[in-house]
Image (cartoon, rainbow over all chains, first blue to last red; front, side):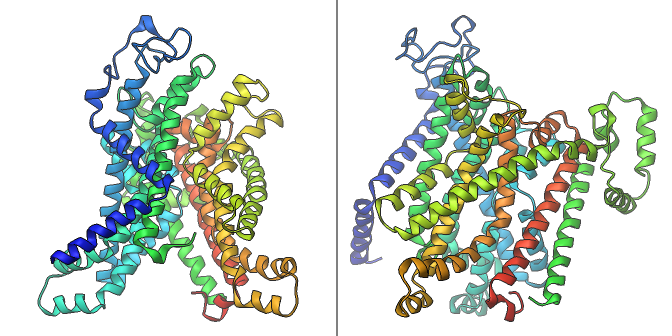
Length: 293
Length: 309
């Protein structure tokens, strides 16, 4: 790359950074903060999230009467430090959402490419699968799978990976179909490149922005799906903890200890909001054709 | 839309239903011995044997599949753990409560979301437009269970105005409906806003204004009818979201409907009931998607001549 285009690139990034609306700036800061919390959970959490102090149960946050500096956000019904549990819940919820989004993207993209490449029967089959996915709300599908099989962390992550695969498949199939007939794909095909090479080295980079946009939009939805299932007691299982899990187990204490429920609920809300705003912004930025609703 | 196109659509819908039943059949078989799954391990061996014979588990797989399908067609979804009752009966008994909840929520959702979206579109880029759109983004990020719990906290626990669980009185309906409507009203607001924006500046609007109609008349006679067509297309997605929202909301408010039943059945691994609910939901969705498809074909004249595509 020449010196000049480097400069141009730097200028555009700087431009985008300064052109960020305040809401996007705040969202970005929050997202970075959450990612840091998730990465550094072991270092910053004051206690182990499983550590119980049965003599110190349901202690309110520090700013309330009876609050203690030892437990900034209070303790729960088993005397576990709420702040530490929130920190580890952020780690697990983000990790599950990240893995789930990634699995869905890989799975959906692969099927989209397969449909575009093989056409005919394979294409029909994949389209029928997409129809099928549209016929079963994800939550119901997830509940069915979790009912039939014993719930485990690995299974749960795989189930979260199913979420939204059909959107990747549909988008990628459409884009790959038009890319296949585009000059560059035909050219490398004539030069003797294998189909795998054409799709991975040449078509994938060209559809990457659509996939990334879909991933940023899928990510907060996956957080919501994970926390919802965990809230129902059918997602992340104790002793592991998730933000939804905390709300679910804490709801019996709404009257006496609201902080067990409300604080993780606020984190869920702010985090998904921040990711959604960033996703929308990124979509408008990268993919002007999707602009509109 | 020609009858042939409709027939093809119905055929595809039927394939989807068969696929759904196959899916349930396959994961049921993959997850272990169906007899043990359905009856539990504590049952005596003779009952297991009788169950295997009755469901033909000693026969080849394809034969089992056919009889599984055949039984479903006759409304035989197996037996629930709850007193060994017929699973379909257990489910249909809970159905009215859920349908009431969903029906009333729908009225509320439409009544709130669509006017808000239309209002926003007519006041584009004003403060109220931004406020409405901001609210919709925020409500997307609020999961149902959080809305429900916050409502319980405010109206149930702090002010003690509304009952927090059950479905006995009219008052019991208020919080679940608000919870379910909050997210979906946002969808309708956004969608009707963008549908309106698409038609407000269409050539026929310019024509209508040029021939002397007042802005309000043109909006009422030309913009609204045209904008209402795309709203039909989210009907299928809406039904799906309603089902998911009802599942969560019923569990927050201990509402004795299908959603609560589903979660309890998943927890107890009451597979006959789970399978029954999954198939009912799937069939409902397939019918909803089909109706939306056909309705759209009739409402939008452009798709009629092109053969529905």
